[in-house]
Image (cartoon, rainbow, N blue to C red; front, side, top):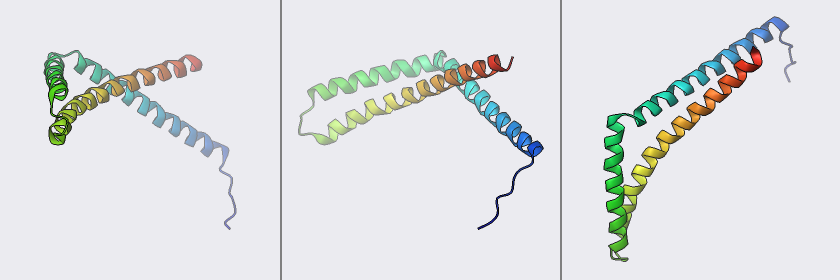
Length: 114
């Protein structure tokens, strides 16, 4: 078994600073990505996509309400339409939430350090 070697204090400090810089960079990237997603969600393009998605989901829900219960292929098709839009908007909401969380972490870290 190899002997455990101690890392010098100055090297430990350098490694700690590097780790903190990497974490700060990831936090800044999460914040930026969240801001981009939030801007997208307020854009005209997102409004068009949202309106279109809502129409398609409503149509799929109506089709599910009236489809023959033995028509599994049609049921799965309509469920897939609903799931696709739920997933798309769910991902955007997760990105925004992660950005907001990262921003809170950033504020707390910088408040503690000042």
